[in-house]
Image 1 (cartoon, rainbow, N blue to C red):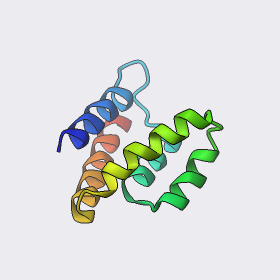
Image 2 (tube, rainbow, N blue to C red):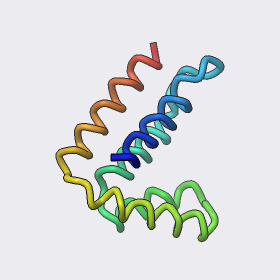
Image 3 (cartoon, rainbow, N blue to C red):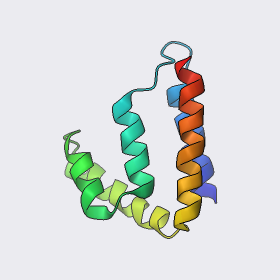
Image 4 (cartoon, rainbow, N blue to C red):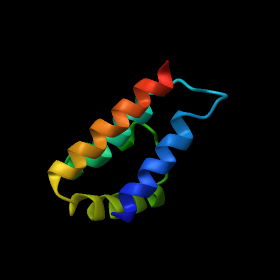
Length: 90
């Protein structure tokens, strides 16, 4: 539960900061992939950012923890984040 709260707070901070209230589509798809996609698909998604190997490895370690959450809860988190992003885009 703690991980999902942290993810929600970071997303709110990034998406709803007054200086840039429009949510970057790459960020939205990366977060959705992080929550819902399988490891191979998510790794391909991460490749477009050309992140250092250490960063990708760390992200995949955190994804292991997220993948232990029930799929239904991950879908609920994704839907909630989508609603937040819609409000930030207005």
